[in-house]
Length: 123
Image (cartoon, rainbow, N blue to C red):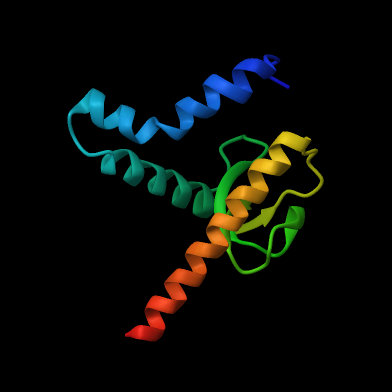
């Protein structure tokens, strides 16, 4: 709703987000680990202290099947946080392009989970 330029959102924005780690490394000439650490801090602060006036945030949480995503994989959902608890926001509209991207991501995460469990079995 806030950005009404589908061409930008579906192309340049997606590409920029996908390459943000490399952009940070290029700009700082250092690892993007600090950026990742900052994101972890934001995540924990939202979870434990609340939302700072926002309607919801995106957080990687264990799927309960919301939005048709397979249960028991860690997936980024819109959530509200209060008093150390989180809850997935239900009922947000998802257009066809977003659904396709979500399905691709879900498949990748399921493959990674399967690979991780195979590695554990080999130990």
